[in-house]
Image 1: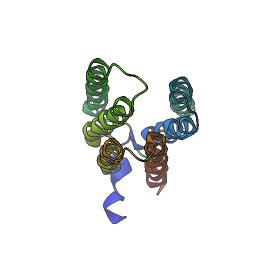
Image 2: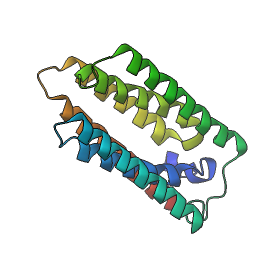
Image 3: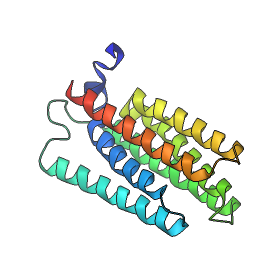
Image 4: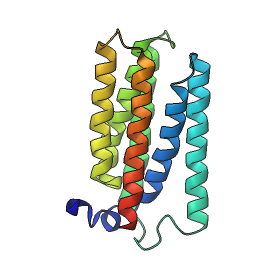
Length: 174
């Protein structure tokens, strides 16, 4: 992991982003155990809310950037751009997939979230980029493997996010 040695100094958003990923990954994983769209959405929102709380508390207690410095303005701008790109792509998925309970809808959602991690590589580092690629690959396999329940791929996505987030946090303290 030598290539990650300077990662926290180059990408100070890595620790907060990692905390958010662990939280939302947990929500996604828990959502995979429900049979309804409503359960998945509630679990996803709960994970996102937990992630926001983790970042807010971490920021208030000064632990998110402790020892690694603060992000440059352009890193915040990239984060904002990634959110805009994700919002745009999610809107496309919603417009083109009217059946919100379909495999296609949920796998394309996972794919576009993975795509936005590619943008976040510039602000959060290579772990985010690698996460984007594996999340996109997982979603594409989920689209094609119709004999396997799509909730399996939803669970895999959650585990991938939790793993990447945990790694990002660990690297930020190394």
